[in-house]
Length: 234
Ligand SMILES: *Cc1c(COP(=O)(O)O)cnc(C)c1O
Image (tube, rainbow, N blue to C red; front, side, top):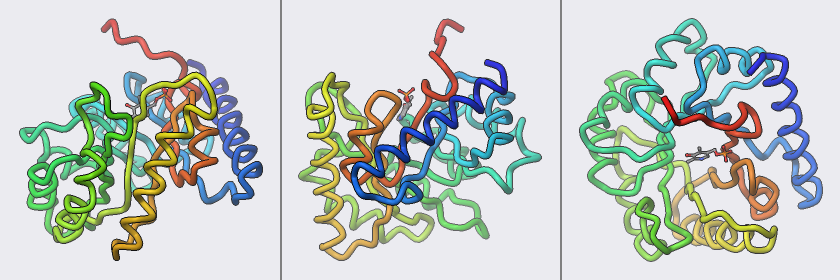
């Protein structure tokens, strides 16, 4: 996509966030925009950067690291989030290259990320991915198990537990979209009341951004609405 299209789409997404925040009587600045650049080339990330975007999300380790490397001239200004499924044989390269991992759902993965964070680097920011929709989704800790896992992760020295992330099942109406987001938001409140210092509720994608902002999202992860439809054919 041309850089002017990316800039225009970014502006439209910022306006959607601002409008949703206003209707929830929230400050739009309290919702951070993560641009999900998976499947799109480094030049598209650079175009978004030039349009003011700083935080980017990637789902695939190899692709993400290749893009981070290609954009190493911007490294100090960019914030890279790993948001995809993570296997234990890939934790080292993720701990070495990314600033955040939002898809932690097992203690073993968290321990490896903590151990493999390079000495001298700031703690890796992590979110606990929670399975709020139930059903067949394989990723995410069950809500009933989230508190104990969150406390264990919060104690790991190489990590900083920032909050919760979820990918609810797609739903057609605003009300249906709000329900799983509301469950995650309530879980976050419960964990904070339980003594954890969390500041990140990562919910909302291109199709349900408004519902997420209404349910207290502090970060929305937007791909399609910025970069266009993804092509997985190659
Ligand atoms: C791909 C992806 C997104 C972005 O989805 P869009 O519908 O394209 O906005 C957000 N979060 C995660 C975890 C993803 O894998």
